[in-house]
Image 1 (cartoon, rainbow, N blue to C red):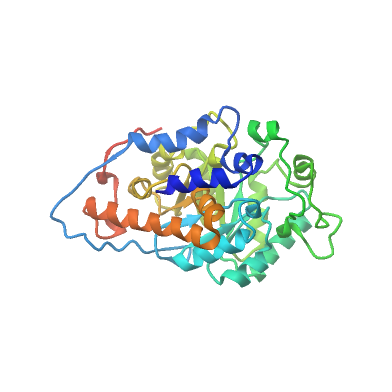
Image 2 (image 1 turned 45 degrees about the vertical axis):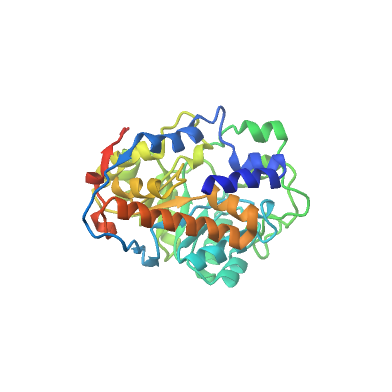
Length: 357
């Protein structure tokens, strides 16, 4: 049923907006791989285990979640619905889960926090101007965000050929409210950049190092999560650097087109981290069975982006909530059929066969 929302959203959105949200880099191999990899993994169906009302609530970085699901950061959500990130955040609050707000949101973090009154994490792209980065972090803290999610897999933007063909630009009238910094109109004055790539290349810092991670940790009291881990060694280094959690991700297939599916890399990263920090995984999750697969392979939670975006496009807050509640029903059903009454019972024993990268 989650896929039904995408089909409907495709009819509702103009082509450039749909392609921006749906597309990936080059031939979109990684986009396809993220989803198809789950189809190679089977789960054991267990019987006579009285798991008809499984408990899949959990705690992550001090946040109580009604299910082990987050909504991943998605930029420019007002291209999908006029209420944009505010509607998504309200849906997440209604579902009892965390929403991760994009640095490039059409709604400011403060506005979303006021509207939603739920658990919010702030995704962060580092800026060349550290003063701006500090201001963004301070704004997230002031708004009540509970974590900073630093995206680290963009040393260069992936070549997204759909956007190139469409000459993608923000629709007239949309602004990136999340980048409005008081007193810094020189950085961003609230206009809508027609040449988005130039705007980003002039402001965002791409040559990140571990020193930047250490600096970020030094300026905030919030836990720092690294998003974009897809190699076991990088996961191990992240834990040694003192990050609070790692986010196994290949940017939804929008960066390195030859990247392996995230679920294929997850077991090796889990083994490398040895339980030192929580692991979140995203990429290709479209069913409750996918969620249970990721948890059984060692993730503490999953994140979904596009499915919620399609729900938002179809029905605003209620559409996004419908997606989350459909996923909840599928998680409950899958846990029951696997004979697991609580999350602690999910392990690799639940997996029948997995192709592990």
